[in-house]
Length: 631
Ligand code: ADP
Image 1 (tube, rainbow, N blue to C red):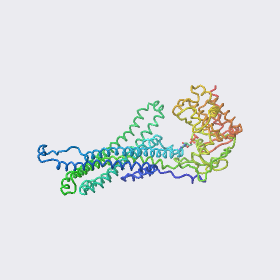
Image 2: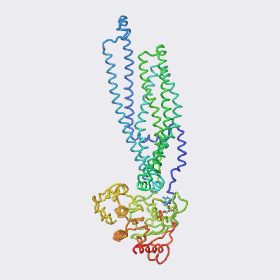
Image 3: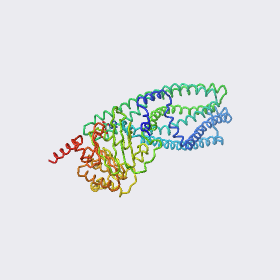
Image 4: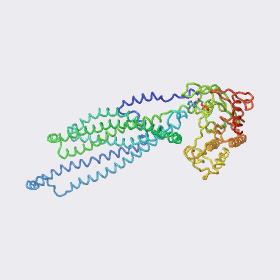
């Protein structure tokens, strides 16, 4: 149950990640793109149906060509049997086509039927593949979302939200393109190539060799293209993330942007990212626009050789004119896939860049998770203690908390005071298990906190952070957040949090919308709704981090009375409150005073005042300030 054993190493440093990216760039077909295969394989029946329907479509696509070739040979034989020398002269050697016979009608019908089946199978194949793509895309996005939601809070502290958002939106959408579009093209190319290849070799191996031999040139071209363009596409995706990240930041802090006349400043930051995107896109286009036309030229060599060599092969008697026509028509079907091949490889390279970002998220592993053998916390929280806890943030060299010990049990109230940066909020984060201590123990009901399942622990704690966050939605939705409670319970929580007076003034009452992050409410109102959210489940342990800092003294007093009424009401709730305003924690059973991560003083208000130390000097400053204000 040791805490340090439970902390898995961070996935990878950004440096090693960059290095592995560089290694992957040397690959023609990236490694990550294959990770979408299992997502498609989940719907294998649908996908297989799509492939079979596509094969059907390709077969019906080729039948008209065979029919046209046979018709050409048939008309030629008709011409010579039905036409006299005179009529040839009279018609200036234009072959006479006689009245339409049943064979000719048969050819026409065969083509009509083939087109009808082609349309049916193509539609069916598209439907099956596209629906597979949407399903796979949804699964990939949900896996990435769950992976992110499982990450510990500290993961997000060093990441830009906008960047993560762009992975979940545009990178995942890029993968959908690969599945629905690129993979259908791939299947189409594979089926067309293989069937055409077999038919053509069967018809004339000489002509087939002439057609296919130049295609070998494409291989080095593909290597050249893929190894160069991949890096550009990766940078493009990163810039997209960068743009979204700055936009998200700017829009969230729009009032600061406007107050500091920072429109130009922010505009130039976005321009930097957008400019990088533009430059990378142009460079990628420069590579792409040499590669794709290059494929056209190779196709030109193939067809040119084929047409030129046609007479020679027909002369050798290997094929008839009609068969040569069929051969030419089928080879035109080869040309399209060749052109698509260029586009497809391009799309695959883009997909590889997107896959790297998406699967890097899916592969994330939280460093804080339920320990092996963890059990749900079924009893009420009756005590919480710290035993010689030492803690340093991952990014910090020195300890933020040093040898912290305290204990608070049922019905108890622990007050925490100290200067800014002393480590008060960090203590609360360890209680919530957002972080784990490097040494020492956090105990709940006398047992190591790691012995309990995290969700069961948190469901018994009410947490009001320093910066209360409200979601876009109504007051009701924000209070009952992610839980199912009756209106009566919501109103009771709002009352305990001293919010009913201002809510009754609002036109829509508890259904009033609070705006994005609660911007339509005052700081004090937001704090009270956040407190109501914490109180709704009647927590065993209430953690308040400067929760009343934005409240006036009178409101705070009222809320305190209601809180302590309820905790004295046989509920035995434990309260831990961090407060800068000492009046907030004056009634605490124990107050700990912190300086630079260590507890320097502890006791009740009266004891600490008598000590004449940190607490008492702070108290006199604050009461002095109050007297001055009153005066
Ligand atoms: P207090 O609540 O007493 O004002 P905190 O517990 O928030 O202080 O912070 C204690 C110290 O830890 C500060 O020096 C602060 O800069 C640092 N700190 C807080 N959060 C983080 C973090 N996520 N990563 C690194 N350092 C942090």
